[in-house]
Length: 382
Image 1 (spheres, rainbow, N blue to C red):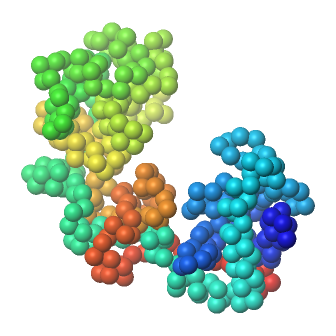
Image 2: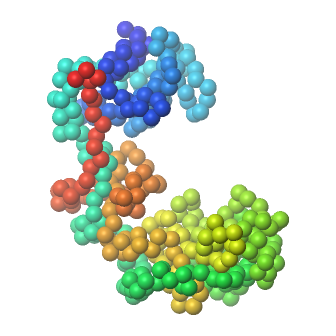
Image 3: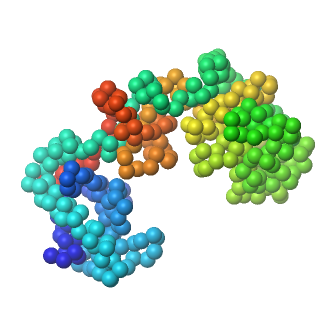
């Protein structure tokens, strides 16, 4: 069989197995490749077109309409005929995978329970996704990053005590009745000084406004253009009704970073649905684990200065300080960047790592890992 025939045969065999429906038909399963190697394949059918991709291999996805030439889409470009000369490399790379897939489906058709049992037993743990209690990792992997150690014992206990004493339940601790741009920049100054790291150069002689100009993201959406001491102008700017308020910037990003590695100090209304729009809440937010200690130092310094201040998700911060949350175990072929966002909220995962990073502690930690179920192959007529 030529390559087109092999792909069409694969799709014919695949349609004998159950699929998932989300508007399209979806088949997803892992299969044995060769020499103890495994891969995961994802097939989606939209109308009459099938899209085939190996989600754990650097190989171009395929686009197929049964009975027609196989096509592929590269780098977001228009699909092209895979039979063209420049596509020979793609065909050569896909060929052994298609052969392995056909063999795997034949085995599953013959004895699907045995094939799935083989998968669950032999699929490498470093390719699986799961999570495990943070306290186990902290105890058995000594070189893991710890927010409490970065923050220091004194600050850690101070934050936990504030939380336990109900600080965040009292709106007087987190809300202001009035606010100006100058007040906001005063918040910024205290925050910058409190969160200064060894590699930071923070000129403490600068005003809050000057610090914001120097250290913030820079895309201020008109915040620097309003009257600095006007309560009315700041309120209108926050409410997006000020003529100088633009969009598309990052006015609250007071410490630069990537999409998830910056620190925000943002101002919102206590209740956006309140037509009177009274009061302001000033909140520190640092999504990245690596910036959490800085954010907590900012919060504590502003609290110490007697300035109403909030911090994003304080309950989760306390769980992380106590190591009562979970650490995500990410498949070796996935990036760790933003990987925690793929876990449901109720799994309480804020940080992630690879299974192989457990090192010598693998044996002790493995029994405690909750693994995400592997997709299995079930014939339609079983």
